[in-house]
Length: 211
Image (cartoon, rainbow, N blue to C red; front, top):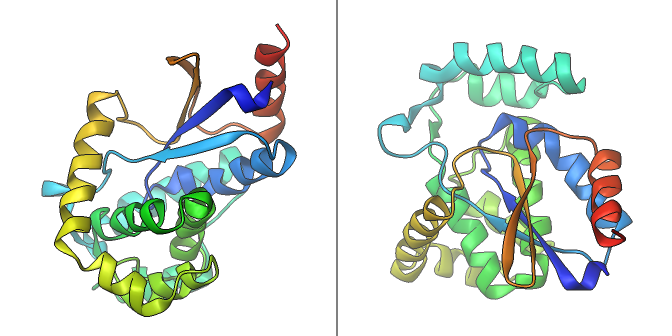
């Protein structure tokens, strides 16, 4: 039964493939509402990778071509005009992953939905994912008061917590995104690596559950 398993989702808010995958994994949750999905994040853009988005423009636009060829999904006009063209936004996975950490503490039942919304907010709507007001606005849709969200997001506990989450995820092998693992009876099993359709994922899950 779906209640007896958990899907572990290796994810990063700044991952273009996670942006393309967000609709598919969202459909999986809608079709299998009893399936538990846990978001884990190892930090895609951290350390030496952190820098102004203009430094990554060529890489991102080349990646968009690959995304579109595989999934039919492209970056939004707002992302290209507001963030990519201006070029000053600093790409850094830590602030949005810290926001996910906050939601996992304050509203764990909505943490997956919140996390899954961030890549689209970034790559389609052009939202700067280091802006606490913008992050709080998204969190408010899941019942978190703006001030509480920002205070928690800015806290030392959150900053230390997300670093620990990065380290723990990497020790568990979370190094590429998106990746799905299956957890049942305390054991983790490889499941899906890379972009897949919701139909493929649901079919594989049903085969495993009914095997």
